[in-house]
Image 1 (spheres, rainbow, N blue to C red):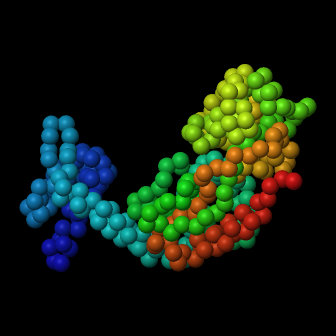
Image 2: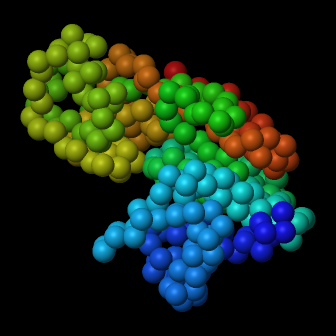
Image 3: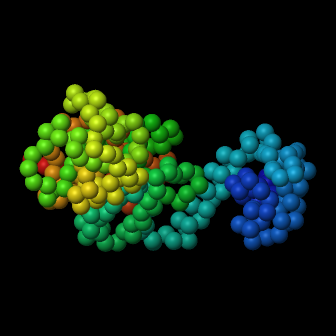
Length: 295
């Protein structure tokens, strides 16, 4: 144990080198010299054996270094997390990772009610399309859109979703399926589960060709394009229902394609007893229960 204690700093340096992939980048992140990084790694290698294969322009971790990677990552994260809890025991904060599209279209418009109900909680949203590594990031929980297979995490199903065309609320007249050949169809790049081809097959028009396609990478901007009359978008219920209720969008066809994906609240084991997260989860479920389809 005494040798481990004296090697903690060197192990932390090793952790950063494994993160960055180089001695120079690790030195920049740690605000020390590159030679100091090399010295720490040398000390560890004297105890453990070779940790890196040093090549001209690359640094390759050995199997020994790889075997330490996850333990170092989890260990130093838990240490930092515990330190922050001790240093700020009365600070009631909650950090949630959430998809930008869901945050802007569904969650943020409802957050005022959460703030009114729990004014003492500081809610922090980390908006990203990437799945968060809870072992690396100081994130308490995440709202994800997928199949629900999230190993080693506590998972709670929130709500299902469906996909269907939407058009500007200012659109007058009626639309038939054949009329789609005269319109621009707006789509995002979410992949095979959310494409027009799937919906057209569902309604018996697999060979229908629109006037043109407009592809927008951001789901929220795609919906805004439909609202401003630039075409007919293939929207998700979760992202367009408020606009349907307000009349800013309308649903020209009743057929909906059920999404294979659902929304899930996921959290690491360390968040199991997080008081503020429990309150947020309760509030979130209540909001979802009020989230009804427009009549």
